[in-house]
Image (cartoon, rainbow, N blue to C red; front, side, top):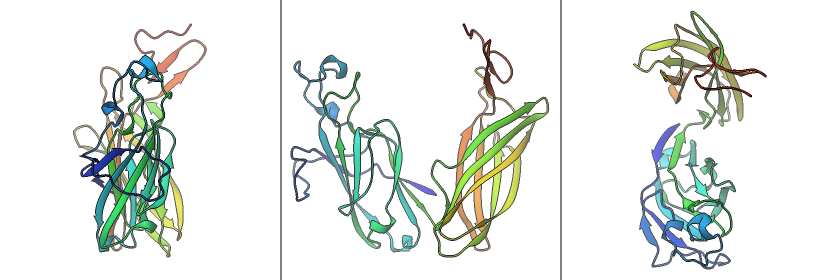
Length: 289
């Protein structure tokens, strides 16, 4: 899916009345770009409930607001919002309808906005954050403290977080890896697509390339899994952290439908009652007792 940075042009304020029935943006709302740690701007005081654990600063409840335009040509596709970090309990509203939430302050998450958007018009997004006071043993911050992105795609796409590479076996000639992904078809018709897998080394040289036919039923997903052999694979270790880029391209007779990529190292890890092995050898200075 196409990723667009969504950090610019937000308004933030402390929510002194979380039970208000009519939503409005106060005149003293702070205009800012994300990330924005709202807790950092609170008063530091010795009587803070959390004490020195959070630097004598208590968090509260905050609201983040933004207007954004959605082009008409996105109608019928797929639009998601990705939040890489909200501390602590975040709820997301699009045009005053709740589209998702996350109670975990240190995990990223996505929400699907398709059914709530006004295409060809201005839209509103509101994120409410409940941090609370005695909630951490260290300074946690509060609010949207990492990047926000819009993910745009058509009816057929690779689900966010769905593309993975796993090392299955190593030998002297190379490595066998598994490429896995969740491919979604939100359309009303089935389709047969070409799924191209390309592995590139750190210099951009193609290490492996294969194309597979995959049938996608309507309104369903496919757990794609294929094994790929990489000749003369360069292994990741603490002295030579070689990385590979995995690219997935989905296409049909009309052209490219979606693209996704990840970066990762090729290595194996194993442990028994006597030792821990990385790529079949013990890492320096590591002992089990």
